[in-house]
Amino acid sequence: MTDDNSRALYDRALSVMPGGVNSAVRAAIEPYPFFVQKGDRGHVIDADGNRYIDWVMGLGPLLLGHNLPESVQAGIQQKASEGPMYGTPTEIEVDLAEFVVRHVPSVEKIRFVNSGTEATTSAVRLARGYTGRNKIVVMQGGYHGAQESTLVEGDAESPTPSSAGIPQAFAEHTLPVPFNDEDAMREVFEKHGEDIAAVLTEPILGNHGIVYPEDGYHEFVREITTEYGALHIFDEVITGFRVGGLGCAQSEFGVTPDLTTFGKIIGGGFPVGAIGGRAEIIEHFTPAGDVFQAGTFSGHPVTMAAGLETLQFAAENDVYAHVNDLGEQLRSGLTDIVADQAPSYTVTGTDSMFKVIFTREGPGRDELDGQCPAGSRQDPDCPRYEFSPKDAGDVKAAESDRWRRIFWGQMKEQGVFLSQNQFECQFVSYGHIEADVEDTLEAYKDAL
Ligand SMILES: *Cc1c(COP(=O)(O)O)cnc(C)c1O
Image (tube, rainbow, N blue to C red):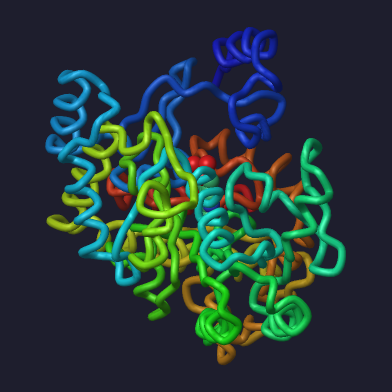
C-alpha cells in the first residue's frame, strides 16, 4: 500500500490550510490523512488507488452510501443545471419541509440552514428569545458543532470555554452536566431553574463514543424541563433519519422534545442543518417573530433535492432494514471477537451506528458469564451493564491513544477505514453488503 500521492497532497495542503485540513478531526490520522479520490458503494478509493471499506460515511450524512440511486442523482442534477440558487423561495423547500413534518413526531414547522452548527446556534438563540432566559444545560462530551454557547467544558459550578477565542462570560451561561445523571440535572434546575432557557442534548451521545441513554432518562429530562418552563431540545444531527428510521430517535424513545436540530442525512450529503419543533415556538424566528435568523444559502435547491430524494428513497425501499441488519451483524460479530480477544472492551451502538470502546476498567476473560447481546444498551440485566459507558467521562477514560495511534492504522492496513479517533461514531450505509461486514470482522480479529 503506497501513499505517495496523499503525502504530496498533504504537503501542499499544509502550506495553504491550517493543519492542512478544513475540519480539525480529519488531521487526527497520523502521520497524515489519506486523500479520497472517489467513493464506490460502501468503499472509498484514495489518491494512490488504495481501496477501503468505508465506515465513516462522511461522518454521518451518507445514509445511502457513495453511489446515489438514480432518482437522487436526477434530482440533484436537475436543480444544479437549472441555476444553483435564487434568493427567493422554491417549491422543493416546501416539499422537504412537508416530508419532515409528516414523519417526525415533534416537528410542526421547520427552518432550514446550512450546517448542524448553524442549526444548534439558531436553536439556542430561539430558546433564549422564546423564554427570555439566558442559561442552557448541555451534556459533558456532547457535541453541537463549532459554536460559542456549547464549546464549553467543566461542570455546572465552573464552566469554562473549551476553545481559545471564547469569552469566559459566554461560558458562564452554559451548564454542563454528565449524561444519564438525573441527580446532577435536578441540582442545576434547583439552583438555576428560573434562568434556564433549554436543555440541549443528543438522544444518544454520538461524538464521544456511543453512549446510550438509560431507561427513563429522556423522559426525566422532558418532565423537569416542562416543570421549570425550559425548552427540551434534541440535537438529532447524527441520529435524525438514522436511529428510529424516518421518525428519528425521538420516535424510538417515545419522547417529544420542544425543538429538534437536524443536519447530516437531511441534506443527502450536501451542506445542511435545520431547526424543527412546535409551531408556536418556531414562529418566533424572523420574519414571523423577533428572533433573527437568516442565510443566503438556506434552503439551497440542490441540497433540498438531495435531502428529499434521499429520504423518499428510504421511505420506499428497504434502506433502514438493510443498514440496521448489517449494523446488528457487525455489533454481534464484534461482541464475540471482543469476548474472545479483548474482554475488557465494550461494543456500543444501535441501528446503523457502531463502535468498540477500549474500556480500561472492564472485566477480564471468564469474569462474566457472557457479554451483552450485540453491544451495550444500558440493560441492567446484562452481565456487562456496569461496564457499559454511562457518560462521556467513561469513554474519556478508555484507551484512546491505543485506539488512534495503533489500532486505527492496523485496520487501515487491512483496507478498513474507521473514524479518525476513539470518539467519533461509525456508520453503516445502504451501499454496504454482507461481504463488507465479514471482511471488517476479520480485520478486527487480526487487529484487536
Ligand atoms: C455533526 C454534528 C453537529 C455539527 O454539524 P456540522 O454540520 O458539522 O456543523 C452538531 N451536532 C451533532 C450531534 C453532530 O453530530
